[in-house]
Image (cartoon, rainbow over all chains, first blue to last red):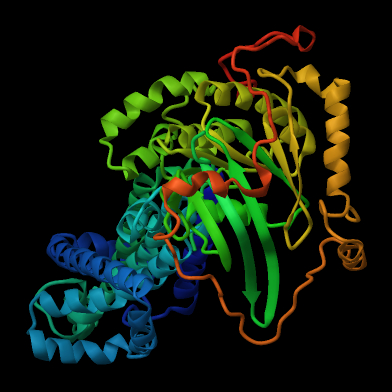
Length: 255
Length: 338
């Protein structure tokens, strides 16, 4: 554990130290770049405001991630089992990823209002794609000899999906979901930046208009921490869902 | 006599990869009587696995018929207990769930399937490993689990494709003896594919020798030794002579039984392992339409074809050959996980 976390921890500490040194030596004004110490102070200072915002952003991110995961898995199953669907959907799916979310978010707010819905939609749109691509690869990558084996036992297409294709795709599904989880929180914040009543995006907007750059940094740190937490939780869920994948095997490195 | 449990006639198969066409099998006839174990030996790439895949119903051949218990199995899986070349355990199922896979697919409730499988774990040397993941088992244990899964399936015929191919020589030898015991308890019509002549002779009632690609039946060698066969049998002079016969038939320049000189020189000129058939353009899959109507169960005797049982003595309780050791019934597999 220590071996794993020590090197990145040291680097992070060095970077924070350099940041502090830079601000102190150059006398950088706090409305341009606050020192890490000042950011920590802002954290304590804003603490009573934060829980509501964090809860809003986190719930949007999780709801969007769940919807994106379900949609992504469903698309993957359709693409993997119906060749026509694959031919029709695949180019469109790739094209859909070229539309920047930052452009789409105002439209979604226009359509769905300033409540939670547009943020959940943004997160779902961001997260379904890695899940769909990864799961489709997992479904298609099932060992053809295993498929022959269960077919020789008399399994039809449905039983083949159930006994071989689905379980074979579980690790791939979770590696797609982990990537998706890393983007989910940022997606929710993008939606909130456009228009919202609660959420870290709102907190960032307010801090900016009152020149509290230190509070913006507080929000950035929280977004990063939330993303990391979600990423870790998905990783844990993956281990629980596919225990065979990790039995007798060294821990997998994060992608 | 009853119909052959397994009957393959005129089986031919060509694979096409792009413009290249490779003939894997060419006019192969094989029959297995009920309660008989037939080994198929041949050089790599002679279509041994193709033969089993056709019988398992997962590969539709270019031509020929394949029947199990009188039923056409071409493109119709589910008649044979098939064990592919690799152990092919499902990594996401524990040992017990792997063993019961086929029974579950047959619609047997899980609990009932487990009751059937549980006693076999002892017999297959896997007691105590019911909850292990396949990745936690040794190579020999994985093979035994795959065999357990195969034998547990209530099917008329058992098809084993080089079940010990991936094992080291010592484990392999032990597994052969052990498989013989298992089979003697079971006595199902079995086709055992291998490239190991000794293994084939120790296990089989008859050995079918295939030529190099495209696989044709070179000869069929009856193995008259009574069962159970002790490990020492391999040093028996009669056994050695049979072994020589099979190896001679396997030699690249050997002629097919009854084939002409010309056939032999053709083989020789090509040498083994060379793809002899090359067509440009698309390859028609010229398998004739299924004709269930005119070949029912009744004509089964005729299907035994050219390689009927050659008067093999398979006396059950006959262990008169005391010189080769008495019956062994160890009951537990040879190796344990280290």
